[in-house]
Length: 539
Ligand code: ADP
Ligand code: MG
Image (cartoon, rainbow, N blue to C red):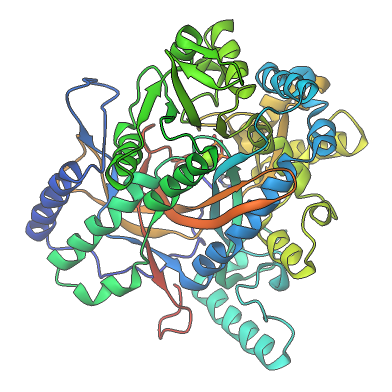
């Protein structure tokens, strides 16, 4: 929905369309490759614990500007540190969420656990953060300096002139006189990454994304494009994330203890989860992984003498939440009690409750306000670099600023996305639907939501392959969202591990607001890196 006729199209990895017979053959091979290598999921429509469908995928990797990809990778340790510091800032979390918890019951329940844990003192000072920073490319710019894809851009006059000349060239090619008037009347010659959200709980797809790179490489080889493989960056998300859990297990330092995955009642995204579990056992044969729902933990869990978490007398060192991020995961008070039990235990949590709260949309919105980053990051260059990836985020609290933002949303809804404090997709309100949604809320209810500038990613074109989909697949217009994983381990005073841990790319139909892979409009993908100084530029 954030695309129109003027949206630029990234140049593709290979020339399309493919001849029909070749397309049929390679798609059939790719489907089997996906199933056989675990790029797969349980079917929602035809569920069976005994079978898998391939996960929706894009046949040929989608293009992504190399500079922006590398920028995202380089920023991740800074973002890890930022989120770690935010999570440990009691005053910031408390004031930022003060209005939200008055009306949002789910966030209030999480906050209650936080408050109680604070009152008793955290039993386990160490947290394990396994984050995913989600980014989209902004292809339109209000101001060249704001979106410059080169860090030196704009200072040097020659460079600036060159950049503007290039921008004019692009303008002509895309007749952007028709663009919205609040943007400069040109399409930027490049694209700049903007943060969609930061996930601090259940950051998924590290497993499948790792296995998708070889799959798309296989497809390119089958199509006679081995020369292209070098432009697909290596992806070590699975090992990076699992090693993070094992580092936390090492810190806990009890040889008989296990890693506990908290799971939903039914795990559709089973391969992604199992990849983590199997990798841990294969690489660290002495470590066992248990899988339990919140309901199971309520039934089986108790605290030992030193507040160790015991599940039928097995001690848990690390808890990895793949569930617990939405109200449906807590059907009764028992599940909330289980969450509290785990929070007060000695186990290292991913995430601990303060990390979970730091990942709320409200905190993301607060972080994007002027001068707030200075509270958490010391280095001015880092503040600038992180600030550049933020897009406009606006509070809807019941105060002067919030009410002005409310008016702005009513007047120009097409520029915005409205987001509640929820995770997992399907909760946002887009563009022209915003006024009605806002008008249905009371002033107080509005404070549980935030408003965000709509990002306008460039298009890519390719074949999206879905279980039960048309064969051969048709070429469709798509947009992508890059997720960068990060691992951070430490307590309030020290960070002991902090690294970037691979990536994932999700691609959706350009007409879709959201691209949940399991939900039906998104597909798994990996980036094919392109350079703007190549003969053809990005577009
Ligand atoms: P969730 O926690 O439900 O994943 P997100 O903030 O990630 O919420 O939003 C869900 C999806 O909506 C994103 O994956 C993206 O496709 C789309 N989206 C979110 N924010 C924006 C935005 N500012 N501009 C364009 N699309 C967005
Ligand atoms: Mg998301």
